Length: 112
Image (cartoon, rainbow, N blue to C red; front, side, top):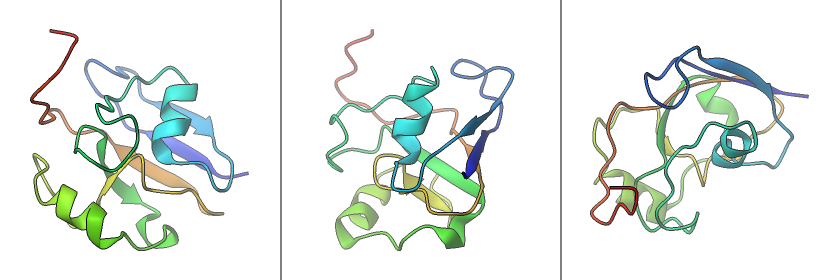
């Protein structure tokens, strides 16, 4: 069973976390299931960038991003070569190390 290590994030996961994942599960679903409330304004439909994550280790084990995901990622704050949308990054057999960026672009955040 693969593991995902979420690096510390001041608001969402101050201590960081190492959690179990299942093949076929998205990084976002693993985070939410483990109490790491990554924003996901479009309800996981690949229509925004609020669940943007950076895969620091294990990036090559993920399926390639689609053209739609790439178009969305172009709008993400702090884009890096290993950036993915958490709702689209599907876990395979390899462990991942994931960083949650400090900021997200959300024009309609309902929590404010």
